Image (cartoon, rainbow, N blue to C red):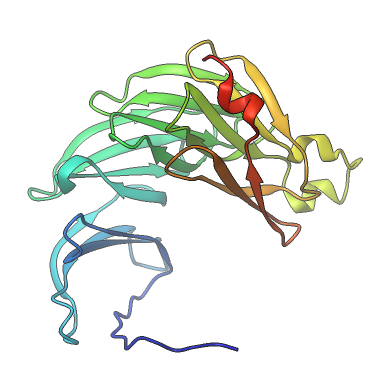
Length: 241
């Protein structure tokens, strides 16, 4: 049974939409769109009053590469993007200027995730690594080596740990020997960079991971069409960083 409890307005684009993100006040959001035929990748910023009227376009930023994901920076003053060239870019949300642009990975960056203070970022890449970055400078602080594509990564709000997921893509898996070990969720120490544990469960490539605000539960999604909830046990919760 489905309940439809909302009204909606919509914005039509001429290219596929890659990501959306709400500002802190809930009255502003951005969209990122792909390149398509003669259209370049765009970051578009809208204001929305929640009164049923259409969102108002306030700013458009032309991007030089196809964006994998975008996210607001601290206080919504900036927008961070990661792209299929393996680079990170920071835009000023008001002036639309590029504040920073740095190559980070040897392959596409699939996703990025901030810590709760938006002081550091973890990126996940096809090159088999995840990297911890200083959000102010985009300096690489730590690198986590996995040997497989990393599709997703999050920072624990509870401990000095980073949680990674990935594995070979579905088309690769079907033409090679199936190794379900590669689909496990893997914990790395965020400071010492070593793998400290893992959780099995999926038999397809992990595509997304999210950790609860208290750091005690995490959810994973994969190409096997399952979402799994993992409750971290007392042994993990009581261990020292």
